[in-house]
Length: 574
Image (cartoon, rainbow, N blue to C red; front, top):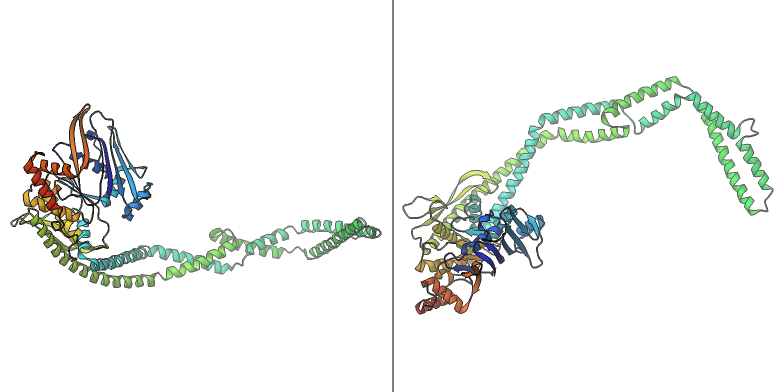
């Protein structure tokens, strides 16, 4: 819902700000006063193309600012946050549009955004019906959505089941296409995996074997050097001559310290020397064993090199180490099982597709039947409304024809207008004038709103311009009555020149024009009480002080505001 609208230097309007409420708001004023600029400002907030020509003469830029309540429209709130904008604590968001000669700027919730973002959000926030802006219910998709909403809750459940089945079928079809188109690739991949696994199986590597063989080849290839080094180390620790060996010297040190048993510090040092002696003796023993086992074995060295060559053949292809090769083999085995199972998987998917096709066909037939019945009811209800809007003989036909199956069924929906009994049905917008089309849209919106149940999504703000073009008298009263009916379920803003329509408003805004020191000054203000009566009198006769016009305006206002004069809030559900 639009709560506030502020306009600066837009056309003839220098500075105007209005607070908008729920229900029916009408904008009135003399011709040329600037009523159109109110809609132009609203259009800028909706992402309309900025025309520098709308900037007031002498001003550097035009500004339109609006505050929308979006708390009840979750999808809009999400889009605002996705764009980086902030929503106030009261659930409203500020939209700002500036138009300068060189460029225009748009801001959403305090964040600069492309004007197209405002247009995307406006699609859910507001619907304009005017001479050149029949935005809603002109697109086939919107007509289908409207018919589905009119068809009722049970139809929506069936449609939900259909869409779920259609989505599942689409996912399965993608998987089948992948399996089919990649069959050759899968076969080639499986063959490569088999060859690799066969090679690994032939070599039969053991975990860590490559590291062990590398160490062995280093050892066997340098036996003499290792023997010399180990022997020297052994001699240093416990040589046969041993006079200067480490073991002899440590033993001597230990015995010497034993003679100082009364000193605690030396006793502790003696224990440490003993530990070093035991450790040195163990190392010397291990060196002796190492020397006795260290034998040159050319045959074993050759076998180790041959085995390493076989292992390196695997590591060149399947991993840097044998452990990585074994890991690859484990994963390759699982992947091969999956590839070999592709044929059975394809057959299973095709069986699932066949089952879903049967379900989709049955649901589509049910949806078509429901749409046909709902289309007849909708056409009849709108035709009744058209008769009360000075379009006697006109009727709406809802055409439900066969189409390629899709996510919303297998029907093509078209709203067709028959402007008079002898005319052929034509798509909306091609069989009526702008004013007539506005009334047709009003009739459709009223019927849809009056048959909506409590689960229906929040309706957008409706804006009607020239909806009363070409009507007067009783027909004008009926236009006002229907606008008031629609306003019982959503916010409605109407630009009108008919008092019969304005009298039904919950809020009446008057655009006034006066000469000022800096040129023509236009303002917008709400009127109530006697001021509203005088405005209605002006609209009726052009003379706001005419006694007859004032009496007529008072009577019109009193009659239109009586509860029995207004239409019920909702019609019976279809």
